[in-house]
Image (cartoon, rainbow, N blue to C red):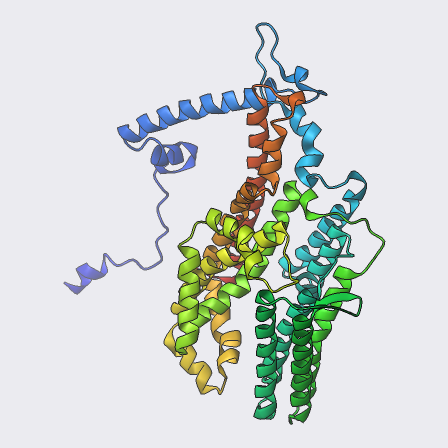
Length: 498
């Protein structure tokens, strides 16, 4: 019996048999994916004929019978027995307006320079092999926004004293938080700095309800209450510096530098905004086109991610007040349409600001878009945090890491890698939603294209379709680019856990 069994045992590795001829090659692929069953064959034939018909009509409309040159509507009007396709002459004539809006022709080099700087700083950040990432990130995230604002507006912005007090109050809170990073700092000084910063904000709120006299200070006009708020903010910053100096340990010098950096950063912002650099003043009501779309989208994207992370952490916090505030904020903004948010930001924000602090229409829209998208981003990030195993938290705590160190070094990098598709999906939705700012009077790309339809020199049956197809292509180009880079990042970081 054993000899019979041994006769059937292979003594060497058998080579695999070739695939059947019907499963390989072009014919095999077509048969497997398109003609496997009679129903598949019928669907393939019907959809194939429809696709050919649609592609031919689109090609004929967009290229074969399209008009590419012309100075007015006469070039895009069909003659006797003729058919005219897309009126690309309209897009060509209005292209500058579609990109810059009503930005003055002689000053458009400033927009080009801002776009060049954005590309020059963003590309090295997007390419992993480029060195000096920290310096590049500082220039892109910290320096570029204010340089771009100075170039686009021209600087020499009239800043009221209430604005200065408000900015220094924010710097006071940041300085107090940074000073608390030194565990050996005197608690009494830290509490005093926090109370002074809070008093500065309360005085600013009171200044919005109570009228007081005016006083000129450092070439800026303050109200008496805003002067008190400004002095309280400076006192808070001074106490934070004293707390950092009184602390001990090797990290004292770094804490002191970070505390001093907060008010210095605010001072640089004020100089950039109020300084006269010899540039022509261009108000934001002249901004429009693709430039305005990029301003709204990039500002919303840059603000929504850090705000969303903080809200996600707040919603999972063990502190009841922090968790309740985060839940109310997220659920409120997620439960309101963006159109309502834009209207509310346009008409309600001025009523909530302290005296002397005013936001123009564009800045109000930016605030509304950033807060709206931050609520959605918070839920995306929270999903990533919930996917992290509990052992990761316990391991980080076993290493002696504090809460913020644990989140920064262990938990948050893993959570953000897991939700890259959700983050980019939110960014794409935000980029497309920028077209809604048209309802509050801001002419973004789509709004500028629609305004071009009313030009009597270009009113033709195909003008509207040509302009809308052009706008759709621009939106698709940016959204597709974000999608492809997201896929590249996922593959590079092995987000799929293969």
